[in-house]
Image (spheres, each protein chain N blue to C red):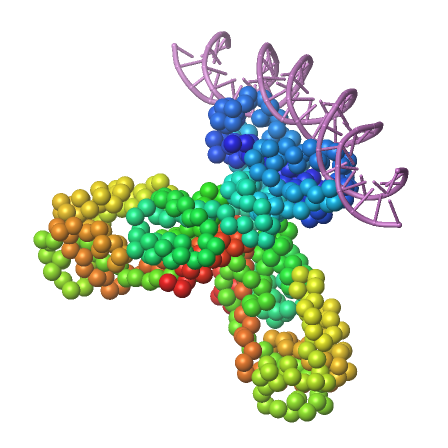
Length: 287
Length: 287
DNA sequence: TCCTGTCATACCTGCCAGGTATCACCGCGT
DNA sequence: ACGCGGTGATACCTGGCAGGTATGACAGGA
């Protein structure tokens, strides 16, 4: 029962994503025939049909879909092994090297918490060096999986914590951010239904995995753009309470009664055994 | 930034476990020199020193320990990809193949629940075939990770659910199982301190990952043996309430007031996307 | 009907994984 | 001190296989 080689997985994932041998081969920097042969060989070794070759292009079989998902996970794990090992380089003591840790945070979220965490951790004796890696909110899970990051600050309900270990740090409510002059801005509280139903203020849309859900509101790319569109009276947004720190004078924040609370978690790969990480998590939960 | 090959990971894990090139090579079914060269090449490609070669044997560096952990995870993921793909073989419809599912259960635990689950799921329209894989309680996590199983019934606090998705199914208290004639067997309830302090009845010890914690009690290998030792008045055990079903006449079960409750979960790999699995989980949570 | 775009096949070649033989080194016994 | 056993490293060779080029088989569209 010979094991799959990462080369084979790389090839198959490329084909499964492109659904085209020629393009996949180009992406892999090789010619098409060896790729064709490699996949045939893979199918023979697994004893399973992975692709349905119609003369016009290629389709995945059920087994092919399984291998696409599982293969991606395996490739991520392999890439993570390489990256984390490189990062741990140099250090020599076999019990607890104080290597670097890469912390992935959604750009501009949890300012306050992040600063407190970094300060408190730096004050710990024997603490590791923390590299902060700002990223979009959907990238964080990928970064943890493929080893570009070791630990992340995530926010439910936007992030899924599935597959990771985590500790909850803070909980906060959400507010609607409206143009200061808008009639709703005078209210003490609002409900989600209130802000969804404003005809002249369509709800802003954030990207999820690079794509936008359909809807009437503007597509938001960054915080500054959102702030400006709200100030111009073009949209309304629902954001965590802590976002009040970056509001403008032309904005009014009104608490939402029925929005789900936002919980900030510190998150890391479940199998991680790094002492530096354990220290960081301990510091975070004590804040 | 070339990627690691599973062959290299396999070699390194073997060496890191044996801490000896010769034995590792033998385990891998190859000669020692190519193994030596492969590891050197791996170190050069990663730009990291993985092993400290003392003339007498080998020691892991910090980076080596990281690669051992991460590499094992990557190898598990790769093996899982192969196994799950093979298992999904044959099926052709690309959206939702109704393949087989392998369900790992601790041998003889959750009888009742398991029977109800299997019956209810089999009655579902379009349900997949379920293969029940009995195993020790510590193997389950490994089976899920390396793809020999797709889903498991686990019991906190004995199993760790870290790294998996799960749904809680049932909660039960724990009881102390004593020889019927013992003085403590007359009590209505007991505390953990009570059963830990009985001088003539040392607490039975279960294996954890194949090894036994130190202590005075007998080392238990299976349920029958435990039942016998209790009946003989040699030991006492703390077990979940549902274990009452296999007690003998010579046993008495006394509820424990302060033992942590045992929760049975249905558990699966976090990234799983199988429709058959989703159906099984849905059935389980509706029981 | 030919042309175009697809994946498969045939055949060759160079590289590298792996084997054998051997070395360099150290600890340990006598 | 000296040889001996056991460690990992080195030198050198070879066969298999990954990858390239050229081409075939086949379907659909103008």
